[in-house]
Image (tube, rainbow, N blue to C red; front, side, top):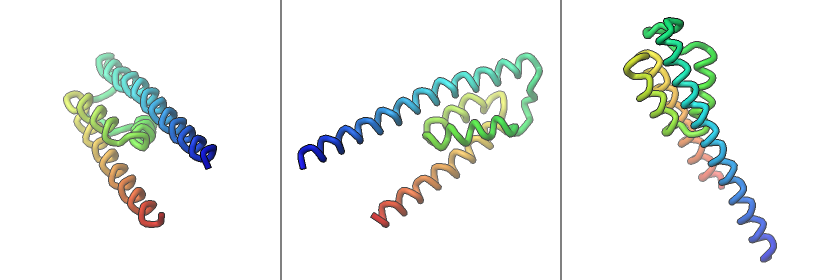
Length: 112
Protein backbone atom coordinates (compact mmCIF):
# COMPACT_ATOMS: atom_id res chain seq x y z
CA UNK A 1 0.00 0.00 0.00
CA UNK A 2 2.80 2.44 0.88
CA UNK A 3 4.62 1.60 -2.35
CA UNK A 4 1.48 2.33 -4.38
CA UNK A 5 0.99 5.70 -2.66
CA UNK A 6 4.63 6.65 -3.27
CA UNK A 7 4.31 5.64 -6.94
CA UNK A 8 1.08 7.63 -7.26
CA UNK A 9 2.70 10.75 -5.75
CA UNK A 10 5.74 10.34 -7.99
CA UNK A 11 3.51 9.92 -11.02
CA UNK A 12 1.56 13.09 -10.18
CA UNK A 13 4.77 15.04 -9.65
CA UNK A 14 6.10 13.84 -13.00
CA UNK A 15 2.89 14.85 -14.80
CA UNK A 16 2.93 18.29 -13.14
CA UNK A 17 6.59 18.78 -14.10
CA UNK A 18 5.86 17.80 -17.70
CA UNK A 19 2.88 20.19 -17.83
CA UNK A 20 4.87 23.15 -16.51
CA UNK A 21 7.73 22.35 -18.87
CA UNK A 22 5.24 22.31 -21.74
CA UNK A 23 3.89 25.70 -20.65
CA UNK A 24 7.42 27.17 -20.50
CA UNK A 25 8.28 25.83 -23.95
CA UNK A 26 4.95 27.14 -25.27
CA UNK A 27 5.57 30.52 -23.67
CA UNK A 28 9.01 30.80 -25.27
CA UNK A 29 7.57 29.85 -28.66
CA UNK A 30 4.65 32.26 -28.22
CA UNK A 31 7.03 35.14 -27.54
CA UNK A 32 9.11 34.19 -30.59
CA UNK A 33 6.00 33.78 -32.75
CA UNK A 34 4.46 37.14 -31.86
CA UNK A 35 7.75 39.03 -32.19
CA UNK A 36 8.46 37.37 -35.55
CA UNK A 37 5.01 38.41 -36.82
CA UNK A 38 5.61 42.00 -35.70
CA UNK A 39 8.99 41.96 -37.44
CA UNK A 40 7.34 40.79 -40.65
CA UNK A 41 4.79 43.60 -40.26
CA UNK A 42 7.54 46.23 -40.07
CA UNK A 43 9.19 44.68 -43.15
CA UNK A 44 5.83 45.14 -44.96
CA UNK A 45 5.39 41.38 -45.52
CA UNK A 46 2.18 41.17 -43.45
CA UNK A 47 -0.85 43.44 -43.65
CA UNK A 48 -2.52 44.75 -40.51
CA UNK A 49 -6.04 43.87 -41.65
CA UNK A 50 -5.51 40.20 -42.49
CA UNK A 51 -7.05 37.33 -40.60
CA UNK A 52 -4.94 34.46 -39.26
CA UNK A 53 -3.25 32.35 -41.92
CA UNK A 54 -3.45 28.57 -41.72
CA UNK A 55 -0.06 28.26 -40.02
CA UNK A 56 -0.86 31.00 -37.54
CA UNK A 57 -4.26 29.45 -36.85
CA UNK A 58 -2.70 26.06 -36.09
CA UNK A 59 -0.13 27.69 -33.80
CA UNK A 60 -2.81 29.61 -31.92
CA UNK A 61 -4.98 26.49 -31.52
CA UNK A 62 -2.12 24.29 -30.29
CA UNK A 63 -0.89 26.86 -27.77
CA UNK A 64 -4.44 27.60 -26.61
CA UNK A 65 -5.05 23.90 -25.98
CA UNK A 66 -2.08 23.95 -23.58
CA UNK A 67 -3.40 26.95 -21.63
CA UNK A 68 -6.18 29.03 -23.22
CA UNK A 69 -6.18 31.80 -20.61
CA UNK A 70 -2.45 32.53 -20.67
CA UNK A 71 -1.85 32.23 -24.40
CA UNK A 72 -5.18 33.80 -25.33
CA UNK A 73 -4.29 36.89 -23.32
CA UNK A 74 -0.78 37.02 -24.77
CA UNK A 75 -2.04 36.82 -28.35
CA UNK A 76 -4.81 39.32 -27.74
CA UNK A 77 -2.76 42.00 -26.00
CA UNK A 78 0.32 41.71 -28.22
CA UNK A 79 -1.71 41.89 -31.45
CA UNK A 80 -4.59 44.22 -30.57
CA UNK A 81 -2.82 47.40 -31.69
CA UNK A 82 -1.16 46.15 -34.87
CA UNK A 83 -3.39 43.26 -35.93
CA UNK A 84 -6.96 43.87 -34.73
CA UNK A 85 -8.51 41.07 -36.81
CA UNK A 86 -5.89 38.53 -35.78
CA UNK A 87 -6.23 39.47 -32.11
CA UNK A 88 -10.01 39.18 -32.17
CA UNK A 89 -9.85 35.84 -33.98
CA UNK A 90 -7.21 34.51 -31.53
CA UNK A 91 -9.35 35.68 -28.60
CA UNK A 92 -12.42 33.93 -30.00
CA UNK A 93 -10.46 30.72 -30.46
CA UNK A 94 -9.14 30.93 -26.88
CA UNK A 95 -12.67 31.40 -25.50
CA UNK A 96 -14.03 28.45 -27.51
CA UNK A 97 -11.19 26.20 -26.31
CA UNK A 98 -11.61 27.39 -22.71
CA UNK A 99 -15.33 26.62 -22.69
CA UNK A 100 -14.69 23.25 -24.35
CA UNK A 101 -12.05 22.33 -21.75
CA UNK A 102 -14.40 23.32 -18.92
CA UNK A 103 -17.21 21.18 -20.36
CA UNK A 104 -14.86 18.22 -20.83
CA UNK A 105 -13.56 18.66 -17.26
CA UNK A 106 -17.09 18.64 -15.84
CA UNK A 107 -17.99 15.61 -17.95
CA UNK A 108 -14.99 13.65 -16.66
CA UNK A 109 -15.81 14.73 -13.12
CA UNK A 110 -19.41 13.50 -13.48
CA UNK A 111 -18.29 10.18 -14.98
CA UNK A 112 -15.83 9.61 -12.16
